[in-house]
Length: 383
Ligand SMILES: [Ca+2]
Image 1 (cartoon, rainbow, N blue to C red):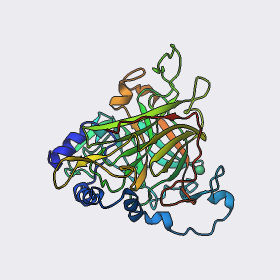
Image 2: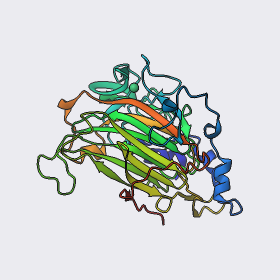
Image 3: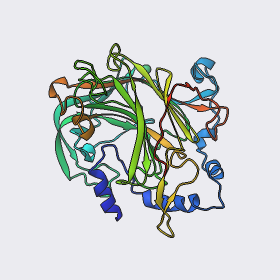
Image 4: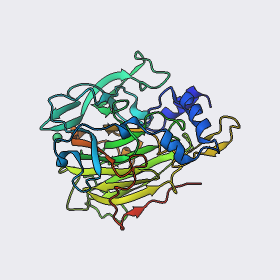
């Protein structure tokens, strides 16, 4: 399919897809490199080292603030504590559209102060039931036209660090309180910065935390009537470009006594070469590795599908995204179904975002892992 067809198809099916127009150029350059049998995956990794990895940091104010409290080998390289009056434009950009994510989400993402603001030392993303009219496409869509608009019945916000905070490997830790109610879909996640292996999901997606419909009737296996939905999910998307992509992951269940919507909790991943681990409140609950994930794309010379070398696609810089969606095909088809308009407004509050890099080996990110032997190993779909 040509690029326009790709984007049009892409938009119809997944909310979170944002595909820069520079993909194909970057992809071709990368594919030449990645499929050269003379070039080892590790040397590719070395050559691609993000400048962020090696940039000396200012002298720490204190050991406590500049290193992770559990493992001092994790050194803080970026953070937002949300202690200032306004959202920092040097760290965050707003995505603004009424795209609906291509999967029938019902929010327009805006830069209204009512949808994203700082209060009591936390970023608040607030989904509000109100009509809003905006662009029908996201801004990276080659067909983007600010005058081609549609109106949707909710507003919310989606903030990202693209080209302001982009990292390969590290510990990404976010303290957040989640919204509740049928039709709410908060997400703390990462997308590739340069899409070097091709469009979604060939270049990967890392979902640090997603949840839908918290506090509604749980539809977990074996959940009895009256059991509230208290699960948060950690997922990877990868494989070929849509529609031949795959995803794998698992969830952490807070259980019946505690809700991720009732208070702040820590959501984190540790990402190193070939391995990503998921944590809730410091508890390691899931691991995925490059034995399970992969990237597959057409060789630029033969057009035959090839598997990316090394730990592709999770060996390139990614950036962070924070958003609260309303509806969408996932949320509206599980739990109590649809959207409960009466629960809005709803908020996701983020006390801080902290990014650490591993001082033991900044190139591979290895050597700083906190591992729980009981964590689930998610198998994945490597062919
Ligand atoms: Ca804070």
